[in-house]
Length: 137
Image (cartoon, rainbow, N blue to C red; front, side):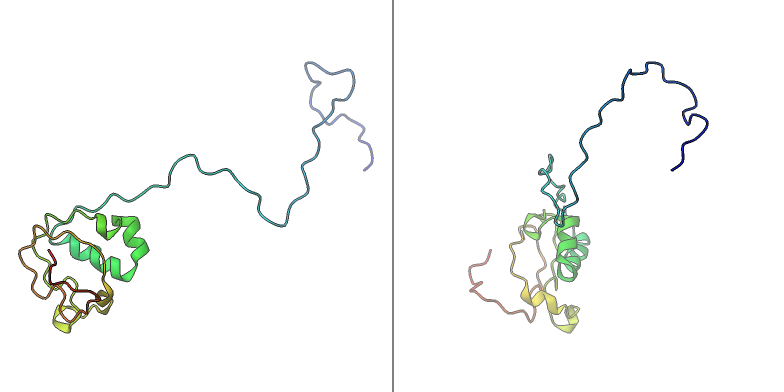
């Protein structure tokens, strides 16, 4: 480019240096692969396990079967849910039509706390099991 007739700096600097200053070395050329980054300093957030009642347990279970990753983000893993306040688990994992026909429930194989449940009618209706549940508590 051609030199300019007037200075491009609006005003002189307050403390000029007698000679030009050195600049840091240029950055390395870009790489084709990502470079390693340090590990995060904080743990990833985890969902607070749900404290379920007769209504919220049904919403959470439906999400568990339709989008397990979203259910875990929202409610935590089903084995951590606080379900002692649930009294009605009727048809919760039933797969027949009068229980809503949730065919995804047929593959349910997780631990869930049932100590407060008083109604388990149809809980596993038309579901199959891969182990003996005769001593299930």
